[in-house]
Picture 1 (tube, rainbow, N blue to C red):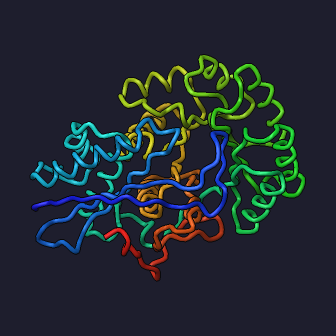
Picture 2: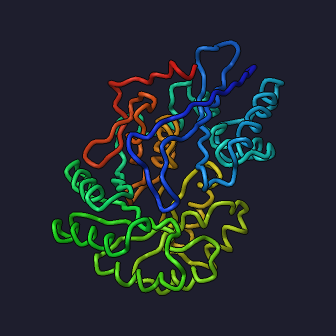
Picture 3: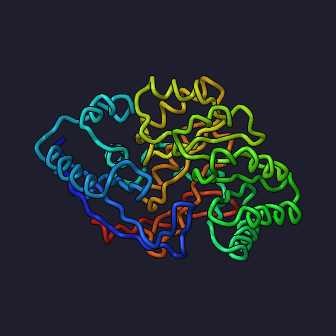
Length: 360
C-alpha cells in the first residue's frame, strides 16, 4: 500500500448564537485529513481535526504545522500500523508527537481507509441503523430563549436534557429548572447541567445544594480545573459530578489513575478531540470502569465527519447512558451526511449519502 495524504481547512458557521460561560461563538474552523492508496485514489479515508478555541491546548497555528509535517511524513513513505487495532495504531502514531485533535484526525482517516473509505470508522451496528440515545443540548441565552429550547427538545422526543449554565444570573437559571420540573414529571425528563467551571470554589457547594432540589442527574465541571477543592466537592456534593475540562492534558496512564483515585468523580465526560483521540478515551474508559466511574462521550462541535466517527466509537460499548452527540444541527453549512436525529436518538439513515464535494 503506497499511501498519500493531504489536508484542507474549512470554516463552519453556527446557525444560532452559540454561547457558553466562556463566551459566544459565531464560527469554528476544522481541518480535514485525507489518506488514500495511490492504486485507488477515489477510495479515501477522511478525518477531522477540530480544536476548540479557548479550550484545546493546541492552537490553530500548531494544527496547521503538525498537519504539514504529518502529510510530508506519509507522502515520504512512513511505516503505517500493522492493523486497525487501537493499540497497534498507538504503537505507530504515538511517536509522531501529535496534538489530540490531529491525532484523532489521523486515527479516523486511517480507520476509514482500512474499512473501504465509506465513512465506516468502526464496523458496528450504528452505521447499519441501530441508533444511539443522546441528550438534547440547551445552549445559553436569555431566559425566554432557553425555555423555548427546552420545550422544543422535549417535543422532539428527548428524555435527557443538558443545560449549559453559569452565563446567566443564577436565579434565572433556577427559574428554568423550576419550569422544567413543574411542567414535566421527574421520571420523564433527566436533567444534566454543564457549568464549564463557572462556579467560584467558595460558592459551589451552596449552589449545588440549591440545584439539588430539581433532581439533577449530574453537573459537569462545576469549578475550574485544577482546583484543590474538587476532590472534596465530589465527595460531598448532593449532585454527582462529571469531570470534563479536568481531563485535558492528562495523557499518561499513571496521571489518569492518580486523577481518578484522588478526585474520585462520579462520571467522566470524554471528548476524543480534547482527550487523546480514540486511544486516549479508550484508556480513560478502561480505568474508569475498573473504578466503577460512569462515563459518556461528548462531541466538541465537530462537523458531521467528526460526529460520525465519535458515534461509531461510542457504539463499540454497551452504553447505559445517553451520549452527548446531539450537535449535528449546530452549523448552517454542515457537511451533508446520513446522520440524523429523531426522537432523542442519533442514527445513520442509509437512504442518505455523504456530500464531500467541497472537501475532495
